[in-house]
Length: 223
Image (cartoon, rainbow, N blue to C red):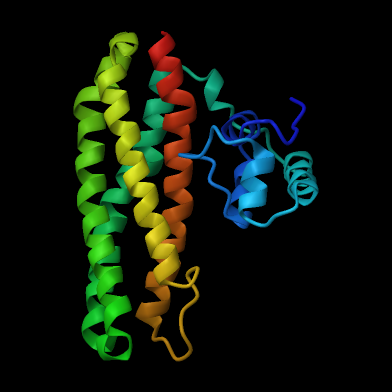
């Protein structure tokens, strides 16, 4: 595809999965904001579109392996990938992040009480939301799609997309509260690990939502 300033961010991520590395680098939302033109998304982040396009070109052309094109994959393969790559790890990672957030708040809360309390509240709420969200996908939406009923799933899809927006807002809140995941001077190992965990959570969740919002859901509704 020819990528221009008018090309939707989500379309670029779908056609060239490795472009998501560039988007993550510049803080460009390619999941919930996948319908936004690339030029507009770059401007919002203060990034030069020529620079972003050049980085995408380098990522794509320097890849040693073929990019996985999930828009060409059968529903069963894509859903299996989502379950294995994102749902299963989240069920382990979210409790770990909450436990570390509680520890950091308990041990270091007096250093920055409002911020650390807000971080804890945010990850607790996000964990609860994502665990419920994944359960609804696994018990309702994904079975509908696999049974060939995707065209009748507009209601569940709308709910999932709204919950994706909620998760996106929570991740942006964590990014703001952590100064872009930069631990303060003198932070202990747990504190640093927590901030790094949040950064990885953001990256993985953006990829997760992209695969659903921009590929799985639109294709299922047309099936």
